[in-house]
Length: 437
Image 1 (cartoon, rainbow, N blue to C red):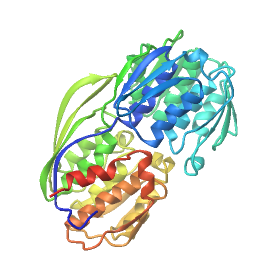
Image 2 (cartoon, rainbow, N blue to C red):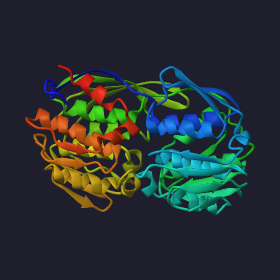
Image 3 (cartoon, helix red, strand yellow):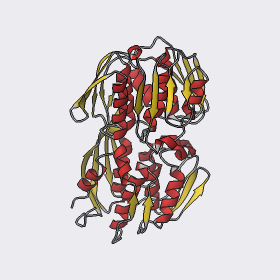
Image 4 (cartoon, rainbow, N blue to C red):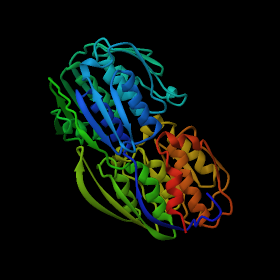
C-alpha cells in the first residue's frame, strides 16, 4: 500500500466479478448442454479460465471474454471428449474434482488431468474412491496427474460423510455423464450450487431433508442439460475480505453490489452480525437458480464468539478472514469441527495459527479449529508465509491494513502474494479504490 493511503477510512461502492463456484458450474453445464449458452459476469481468474480451456480441449467451441460475455457452443455431452486429451486445471480443486467425476462417466473418454505444484499435493481419493466402486477407472487414485478412462458406470448409491460439495457435485456429474440413477445421502449439509444450477438447466432432482439435518438427493435418467443464459452473481467470498475491512475501519461506509446470497455462502455475514457488525443486507432477485443482493457495511466494535460447529460447512472458505475479524475483536474468538480446512490449498488451520503467532496475535490449535485472543488495538509485526494459499495471503493483507490504522508504521511482509491472482485478480485494485482519502 502506498504512503498516501488513508488506512482508517473506507468508502465507495464495489462490484465483484462472478462467483467462482457459480462460474465453474456454469461453464461445466453450458459445455455439456447441446447448443449455445452464454455466461455473463464470468470470473476472469486463472482457476475459472482453466475450466474453459479444459472444455476447449474436449471439443467445445468457446468465444468472447469475461468482460464482453462468453458464448459456449457445445455439440452435447455425448459428443465431447471424442479423443484422448490432456488438461491442466492449475490451482483449482473445484475444477479437478468436478471434472474427475464428469469425465469418468463418459464411456470411451480418455483424459490426463494435471495441476500446479500446490494442487498436486491435494487429495483426490475422496472423489475417485466412491466412483471406482461403481466402475470408474483412475490411475493413480489420489494425486494429480491422474489418467481417467471413462466408463459406463453402474447406478450410484452413495453416503457422503465429509460434507464436501465438491465430492457431491463430482458424483452427480458422473451420474449424468453415464445416464444412470443416483441416490446420494449427505450426512452433513454442504453448498447447494450444483443442485440449484442443475435445476435451472432443466435437470429434475428430488431433494429430501433428513431428521438429522442431512439431505437425500435422487436423480433418474434420462437427463437433458439444456443450454441457458447464465447471469452470475458477484463472488460473496471475494466480498468477505472487504466486508471485514469495512467493519474494522475507523470511519466510512462501504456498499457491495449484486453478490451471491446463497445460505451456504453468506453465513459468515450472520456470524459477523453476531459479533456486533453493522451490516445491512438488501435481497434482490434470482439469477441462474441463485438469490443475490446488496450489502452495506459500517465500522463496528466487534466482540469474539465461539462459532457453533453446525455453522462450519457454510463458512469453510471464510474462516481465514473471520479469524482476522476475531483477532481485532474484543475477547476470545474460536471455532471447532473444521477439519475440512486441512484439505484446502493449504492446511488452513495450521497455516492460520502459525501466521497469527508470527505477527504477534496469540492463537492456539483446538480439535479441528483454533482459539484467538482478540484485541481491537493490535499492532502487527513480522512476516507471513501464505503456503501458496490465496485466502491466507488476502486475509493477512486485510490484517495489515487494520494494523496500520491502529498506528503501525510498517507493513508486515506477506510471502506468496502471487497466488491471489488464481481467484481474485483485481484484489489490490479494489483495495486502493476503497482506501482512497
